[in-house]
Length: 83
Image (cartoon, rainbow, N blue to C red; front, side):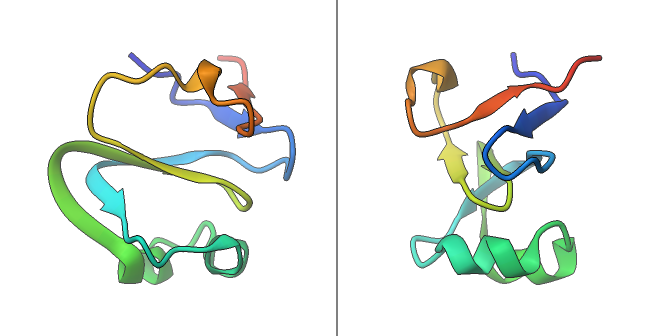
């Protein structure tokens, strides 16, 4: 179960999530910096994968396809944005 109101404390941006997608391996910092939050532009690097979820803000991104504790990833600065 994941908070749907995540916010990045590094770039102060809402973390978007996309069910049944993963990010292409070619994604980089500039891609997200230039294209967030425009879904029409992000789709260029999204790959359909049932059961997966793609997360991104302007400075970080993750593709998750199995149960994962995101709190263990030190480089992520994502926190609950409060409900």
